[in-house]
Length: 435
Image 1 (cartoon, rainbow, N blue to C red):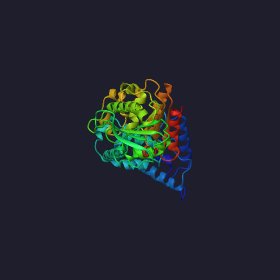
Image 2 (image 1 turned 120 degrees about the horizontal axis):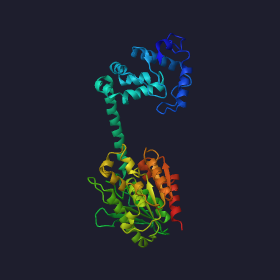
Image 3 (image 1 turned 45 degrees about the vertical axis):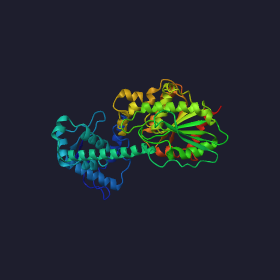
């Protein structure tokens, strides 16, 4: 317990007007004590090893104000084994005298961060029901509500921005019609009876490699198009000169009632169609690589995790799968934490459906070789990839993750441009397609 008599607030020097002579030594001892007991809710570097003159003045000022705030002149210190004890009457006094900003300003770095963090935790999270009830109004309660509203608004803006990025394939110009010499494109070929079940085929002119890359666009399972420039342009310019056939597909989507499992069936049906037509395009039906971005990455991962989805639509085994930045590989986990708002529209509220549509939870055996590209700029994409990789590897699969310091849309658009990213994807394709 600190008391006013112990703080020795009389001036000591011009640069150190109030700081107790032995404060730093005591503070270091407290910090060392807390580390020995591994108190994880406290800051690891709570007390700096030395204080500047400015920091000393701030500290002394905060000490004085704290002592004024607590009329009995004491502050209960942590014993590092139990929680800080703050009597309810002192909590009420804090509520009546100051607002939340004042708590932060006075307590966080100034007097002792070990104490400050815990006091804030107690004030904001662990007040008894009785104290909360009696303190339903007042400056700090109003400030807390204001802060909560601000955090919610900021989180919503962040989600909206992420949602726009997730739907990036739904906008932008269609790919230009110009192709490298002697290379051809056939567009809007039907692979099913629905108007959305269409695909485009880009074929090399000479020296075909026999390889087919089947690309599934993204767009939040609700939007997007096989002909968008960011889906096609750089990839065609890179892979057609290598002799590869490049195919992009559309699939049945709906803004009102998206159905990812139906979309997965469409991808499987398109795969079967490509395998059936590959010979007529100068390619080998056994040498197909599946690729998808965003929602499309989720769909190709779903087919890879449970290949029965593909075989039911007549598809045969394929060489490997490239998943370009899916953040939906473990839907069961994602849907139980804060997530993009449109996920609720797409995947609903039924945990059984989350499991059905979750690639990680559909893993029952080793999938074909997979490359999981993920944006390290997104909070959840790479952890999702690593969780899937761990589960698939335990089943004997060959799965590799490829974190890239690119945005979600750049992961798609920049594939095919010269550089280490395209080289890494090429290396994976060569590894699964070499005879």
